[in-house]
Length: 457
Image (tube, rainbow, N blue to C red; front, top):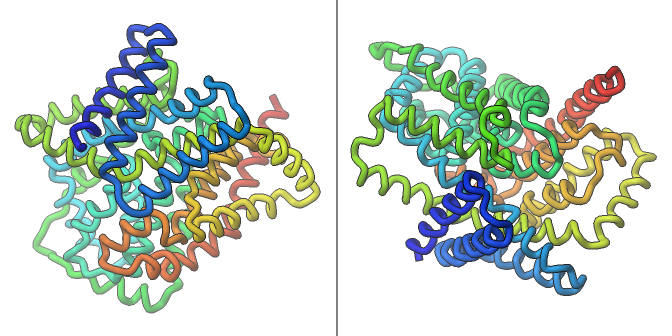
């Protein structure tokens, strides 16, 4: 069934970009897009095993039950099923970014930088977290095992590594213009990427700075972290170390101005086009595509890894969209009006706590955050659209780093050879607790700045 899955990814790519370029008739595009999504679900679900398979099927089942119980029109079913088509499109082009990274000397240069700065664990942690954040922007959750290859010989403790990957990947969730879920939230809240950048970057700084402070005040961990091995005979190439930063910044800049240079109907489609074009140019200059058979094999290997969560993303979007078209949406809105009597700080904190509790019970952040995004009017709780977007992504982060039932914790645990519950419930507990009190303050400050700016204009 892998061939069916690969075919569905190619079909999604052809259908979406074909429609953007040639403007297919609406009815034909609907038929083709529905067909592509159904084939993708069949192919991917035949590969997936375990929790993600169960929860994907459960979301699809519950979504269809709600659809039939409320007798929703067929147009809602079509919209709900195809609303997430941009996510497999994005993942169809992301693997191209990994090829020039593998062919370059980036990994060796980063290891040399670690060896040269092992006597300053706090600064080193901030650097590694930031670099992991950049790597995540390029290769998503694959950055965790990739970073571990750089750190294997440094003998950092499992707790240090767990904190490192949490800081880097949490920063990625807060701000990644190429992430499908990130863009989905922006689309749901109607916030342009360029308007969100200051808020997202601010949260990234807070996450990394807070994590570094926690490393500094943990005396045992601080002492252990300076015992990394050092190869003083290996020269450090700073030019190569920071060249990847230039590539990522260029990609972010292009994504920010994409609506001016690419006339596509959806920001996710524009970003996918930018990734494809830029990675092909980068790969051509670095001679990363000389062996086509090897490139094809690596590409399919990346797609196989995505099969674990693509059905989950599509099914959660389906459920959230169907759910948002029921009367329950209005009831939630009325409930939020009643909460206006409480301080906004506690309302934001409550949303994070609810997301954490549900994630610990096995309810993935996708369903919680999607439901909030599609049912809550930020004006009812006096939040600007940008602050509301940041609060949704922060809820996602809080549920992700603490729950052993989320793929992030499992990937980190497998990478550092630790139990998932130890990574999430033990190593990440202090970070989660601090951010639970700090994050609402950051969101309120950003909200106040936006509301002041809007009133001024």
